[in-house]
Length: 261
Ligand SMILES: [Zn+2]
Figure 1 (tube, rainbow, N blue to C red):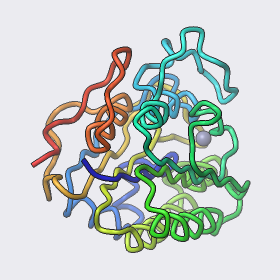
Figure 2: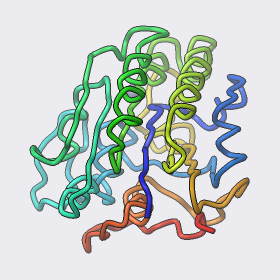
Figure 3: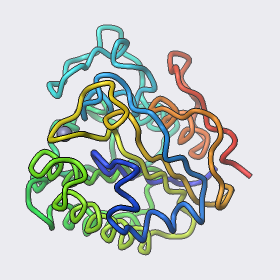
């Protein structure tokens, strides 16, 4: 059992990591377990994807199929609710407001939102600043740090265009700043929600559906390439194992057990 941080780099394509000359993400691969062929869900759109990440069910089950949130017809406790039942301290740091309903009211100990997602290149800096103020001081059991500028830049310049790759490189630097400031007891899971093509995403094309998924920390294998298929649904069960909270019976994903020593 340990503490964990989930870092989302919205719209990060795995092939952008090398193309942009990222330094932090390859270093994370060296010191952890990873796959560059994890899969998103359909529709490969940010809010449906995040609902699937936190509730371990596909959009057909949670019912959020656009970036307009709606309540689940048959509610399922997500990772944050499961953590709350166990008395854990949880915190969110994000800059895209639609994510406010990923957990039920009354579940989080701390939440930071500022609408900075379209400020290039610095729109994720403050999110990282606040996370770095809070996490080492308050030591939450779980923190979610959402970095949204990469997706926004993809919509502006097109995925894999120069502007997008420059933003990916910039955010990789911000990720490096965040990871350097985290206490050693933390496990870190870094992933995307979806990829993108041209100036959009949401389809079943490989460019939209293929995402990086990387995990490192105490008890995690190092320099290891994950062999089994990983989708967004695996995030909550894997984090639940690290945090020591029960997997809910309605969750459809599985813990990626092979990442553990
Ligand atoms: Zn987008």
